[in-house]
Amino acid sequence: MSELTASDRERLAREADEAAAELDAHARAGRALPVVMKAPKAAKPPRHWADLKASERVDAVLAAGLPKFRAGQIDRHFFKSASDDPHTWTDLPTAVRTQLADTYFPTLIAPLRVQTADEGTTIKTLWRLHDGNLIESVLMRYGVPGIASSGPGRQRSTLCLSSQAGCGMACPFCATGQGGLQRNLSAGEIVAQVKAATKDGPLNNVVFMGMGEPLANYKQLIKALRVMTGDMGLSARGITVSTSGLVPRMIELASEGLPVTLALSLHAPDDELRNTLVPINQRYPVLDAVGAAFAYFEATGRRVSIEYALIRDVNDQAWRADALADLLKGHGRGGAWVHVNLIPLNPTPGSRWTASRRRDEREFVARLEKRSIAVTVRDTRGREIDGACGQLAAGERSA
Ligand code: SAH
Ligand code: SF4
Image 1 (cartoon, helix red, strand yellow):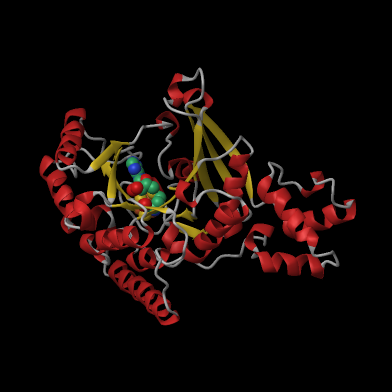
Image 2 (image 1 turned 90 degrees about the vertical axis):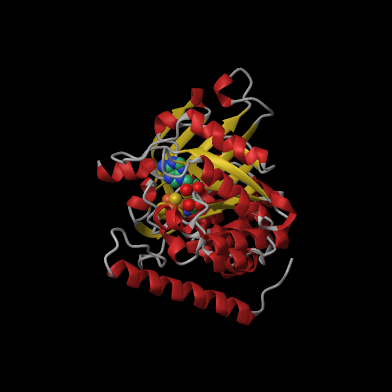
């Protein structure tokens, strides 16, 4: 995997700042919903053990007057077992447990509402953060014996989690985007969602497809990914980071030595339509975003997912399927570097857009398959509880 030099990183950060300024100017010039790259300043969530690097954890136990080995012991309890309550870690002296609980294990996310669907195998939780902001995560179990709605195949589970409270990218078909960006999540708050999900059994996959644009919260994302793949022992291959296409950050991610799967939310093969559907396209157009996705594949060897929400009569025309195939095949290996994931649009309340007709969806799939582009239509788990991106939290806010 290629390494970025310090000056490369500076340049990428500068490019991201310039993009933010450009989009702000664009918003001030009269766009309906501004794209917001930088999260508003907010009081930091309490610091958690999961926010600390391994060396900082050792420093923390030493500062508390404890021997160094306690750090590893606490790591094993928190990251490898189901319990997140230090009071239950009985191999630690009682006084130490209380001290730890107070200092390093604050409650970062508290469940506000739990909804289930698919005979209990889809569980959506609305979480309240320390400052009252809301996020959501969805746990989906597959192949559960005796439960047909959990789908076929071996038993496995996927967590869809949030990386920000809200999102600043303003995609008009997305409930989260319509609510704007409240703030970035801390690494601890991201990890807390994973930790909560592992209480229900082992977790195979984690997808950053809940609320937020993960690459707009880059530092905390990387910190959380290192904890998840390092301390928690999750396979990087089982983790998917989904982005609306923040090109400099996609390039930076390729150099982190974290072979996670990248998903690019494309939704249109042409700039004209994508400028509307994914407003960040005005800064990072289709060719740049797809080019960065291909560069990610080249650097990591990980096949990239192209997300495409099928919206009736908006982006589901047969000619757009052909244009998408051309676009993807325009890069190396004739398209074998990508997998297209078609998502039937989950209409947001009051939206004029809806999912494609079945026959248009079938034709779209057939056109891609004919050109040997791998394609699947995403299952619609949790539809009846508004399983898609951001809808639960948005509903609660307006209630
Ligand atoms: N912000 C990131 C990740 C969160 S969104 C991104 O956009 O990639 C996760 C996925 O859900 C994205 O592909 C997004 O475009 C899609 N999505 C958002 N709202 C949707 C809706 N109403 N119906 C179907 N897919 C939706
Ligand atoms: Fe943000 Fe993703 Fe929703 Fe766009 S689709 S507004 S990037 S969460």
